[in-house]
Image (cartoon, rainbow, N blue to C red):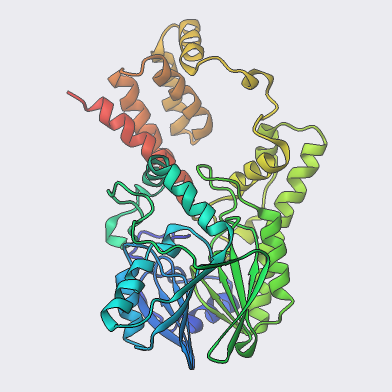
Length: 444
C-alpha cells in the first residue's frame, strides 16, 4: 500500500494513460505527478486486459468463458470498481483471484457477488493461497486489535482522498467478504476460456501472497510485491514480513522476461528493460538490508546499534518506485532482526524491564520534576533531534499522565515530528500520540 507524498489530491490525474506515465517516470527516473492513483477509473492496457486504479487495483483479463479478475479492491471502493469494470465489459466474472488476503484486496468481493446476483450470473470461483483463509480467521480472532492499529496507522489520512482506510464499522473483516473456494500450496495452473495462467506462492508483505504469470500475454500480475514505494516489509504494527523471500520472488519474476507488469498499487509497466530495472532495484535493496543486518548480528551488535548503522543509498531511495512513503528501511531492519534473532533487542535492561511509570518517576525524581524534562525535550525538538526529544517527553508523560502542561508539550513535539517524517507508518503513530495528548491537554 502506498501514498504520494505531496499535499495534493491523490485522484489528480494529468496523464490519463497509466502505461505512458510509468514509461516516462522509469525512463526519466523521476515523477512529476502521482504514481499511485485512486481514481476508480478503468484503463484498457491491451486487447482484453484492463486495470481499475483504486485502493487496491483490480486487474482484469477477458476470456471466451468470462472475466478473470485479480483482487476486488476494498469494501469502501468495491462498488465503484465494479461499476468501472461494467463500463468496460458486462461478461460474467468467471474467476476471482486473490493476490493475498489484505482487506484492500478482498474486502470489495461482496460487490462482485452482488453484481453477479443482480445480473443473474453464477458466482465467480475464488482462488487464493492456502494461507488466505488462515489470515481471515486471524482477522476474526483479533478484530478489535486490527481496528485499533488500522485507526492508528491510517487515521491521519484525509477522507477527501477516498481511500476508505479507516472506518467506524465494528467488524474489521467485512461480513460480505468472500472466502476462497479453491486454495493451493506452492504453484497452480488455471485455464479459463483458452487463457492459461500460472499461480506462484511468494512470501513478501504477507505469507499468503500469489503472483501470476500469463504466458500468452507475456504478463506478470504481481499483487503487492510491486507497490511503487519502498517495499512494505517492516510495518511496526503488523505481523512478520519476509524481505529475503520477497526479493527471491522478484528474481524469479525477472527470469520470465515479461513484457507487461500489472501491480496491485501503482502504475502498470510495459517493456522488458523497464520491468527488469524496477524488479531488480526492489530486490537489490531488500537483499542489501538482510545482508547488512545479519552481518552485524553475527558480529554481536545490538538492535539499537544496527538500526542506526544499516542504511540504503539515498540515490536508491529517491527513485519513484522506492521512496519511503509508506514503510521505511529502518522498520525493515527490525523485521529482519525479529525473523533471525527473536524479540529481545540485546539490551540487558530490556529483557525484564520495570514498569515504564516506575522508571519515569525515578528519572523525574532525580532531575527534580517534569519541568526540566519538558524544557529539554522542547529544546531538542526545536533543534530537530526528535528521537531524543520524544524519549524525554515520554518520561514526563509516564510520570504524570494527567498533567496538561506535559501533554500540551507532548502534542506539539509529536506534531513537529509527524511533519518531519516521510513514511505513512511513522506519521500515523506520531499523529496518534499527538491526538492522545491534545485530548488530555484540552480536557476541561
